Length: 299
Image 1: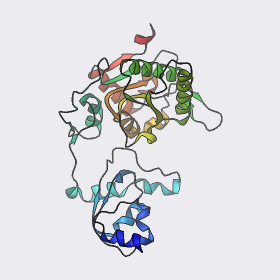
Image 2: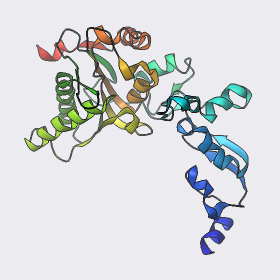
Image 3: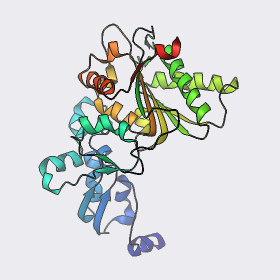
């Protein structure tokens, strides 16, 4: 009874989508329901708070990762309520055109490809850098012999040489900026596991301070977060031009836009340029003078 009384008298009630169906909320009607991260919400889950409010506000970015749907029969659920409402009621859609997270160079590719150039960086972040680190850079591993490997267990892909290269760059960044928060991201679970193992070995060996603020995760694990710097290990390197998960352009978009001041993409252009978006991204990096070869560090 007490919890129900508190809820009924509260001005604001916070809950998960499914939590809105809690028995203590049954019969409660709200003036407005605000759904955050609506671009990741499955339509049936979004319907739950909709039933309890006179008005609905959906907040989210449909250019980021969609909800995970594993069943082939449920593919229609990948289109979120946010996307459906944008398509049906463009006149009721408002885009927030100023972002307060990242340097304008990190924003540039996503702005050109996904947001039609409408996004602007606030003056407080537009030119905010870390000394000695370029804000956005594609490091090309083509010709370095960094070949991918596919695990026998689950078929996930890893690339040991690329992982070691990425960690070398991470160590350099931390040497220059010990207090920075750093994310290392890869599209494959096997590559994430390998990166974590190699990183742990370096910490145990005393090569890396144990207190370093480093997170290693998949792209999905980083969505909604931010770090001072991000290093993206794109992993794929093969003779067939197979890019796998990277065909989903929103995956790399999310990975690089977690960064506030510095973002480095590490990948094999010979493989990745077979994909239309990644080929465009490579050209964009070259036009921005944000392209370098891994050989620059290996000579």
